[in-house]
Length: 99
Image (cartoon, rainbow, N blue to C red):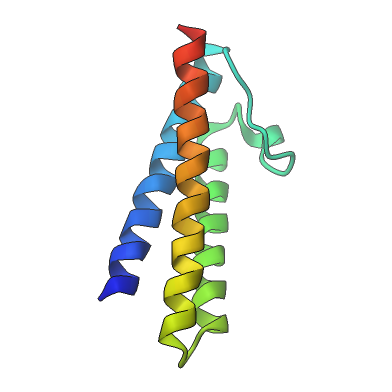
């Protein structure tokens, strides 16, 4: 149950990151920091699909690596949620600075 809650939280934060980045790039006030995604930042469909695919791959990797180890799965998901929360926090800070 906790792993499911963490997974949903991670997905929501990843969606917030995607939306904030696309809004900021669309306004011309920032750019994608990830060098792998930067070439796609002006192509919203490809950018969103690629970012969603990468996030899905990360979650699948965590689930595969922690199969049969529920405590390790929760720890890994907590780390993912924490990292994504930091990214969303930084995005929020950057968007506020630009206003």
